[in-house]
Length: 421
Image 1: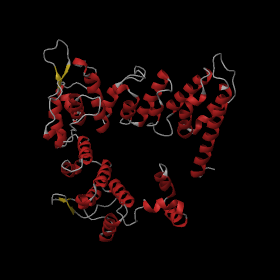
Image 2: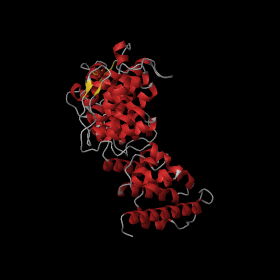
Image 3: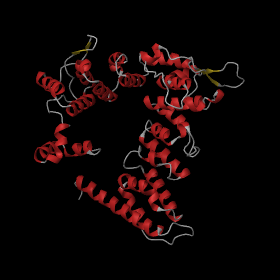
Image 4: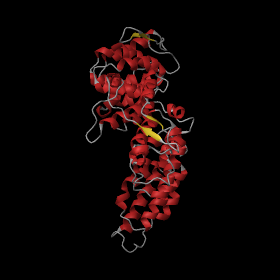
């Protein structure tokens, strides 16, 4: 099922033709959007009344009233999957049109559906969505309120972000009495009604202290630019290098990491990641594999690949699987070389090859097919070093042979699709 959207993109109109002839492809009909739905070059759907009676601005769609009626009819009468597909498609093409449709029926939707529809606003999120999201902060569903708060925190210029910045700034500040620059943390003592309306969840998960839990939510929702102002114009790298009093550094850096991911801030992500060679593979906080993976997603693709290549060169492959999953495909040449070199080192050491099966599977899909020639040298069986896993040499040979075959098959497929065969 995770390949269906890619399959539909590849098949185009033929997917709908096939779906009418083959029951196995009926998902294409459920997820398709009628041709009358607006195209990107035109404006959106006519204005619909907002939940509080104020209109959400939207213009006429391309194709005029007929296209508007088709979109509106599908939104009001379609199956849930069809409505989700319509909203996602419109959101990519005309964000205001999608918002107008959602706002028109918002009050009558089920809570679980409201949550799913609200999540679609991540695509094309802008300041134009702020009034709607502010109203959603008062939704009767806690999950909807939390998602609305998360989306608003990704808009650094929003009123919500300003409120959270003021709260966070009262908790984290430079100690004026310290002989060297030092960040001092005073976590909130209460979680008042205004904080809860802005999405702060009062009850922490098991094992977390209340004050630390509230602090993390405030810091992750505050715009990162506020810390530059509070720290006298220091850069993200300079701020994250400052010592933090009383052991609050892991909590503070983890919250900054979540903020950097939400706000897609490459500067802060870069600062929190640090040097790939200096990162401890097993360190907690912002150096954990999951946190690193999310921070990497905010970096440009080439820089992301370079950082992961440096991490693999320094630490090997055991902790790199998640990191590889967020790198653009096909892998850039330096990253591909780093992966192949690390696999070669594991082979020569006599490591058990199936420990690296996950990375091998990724390599089959993500390595540049041009690497097949270089990998040919690794397909031969080798003598097993002392202490190696029994039969490791033969297993490695088979694994590399399969990888080479797959890369060559991908090259043939790409040549066919490009008309070069």
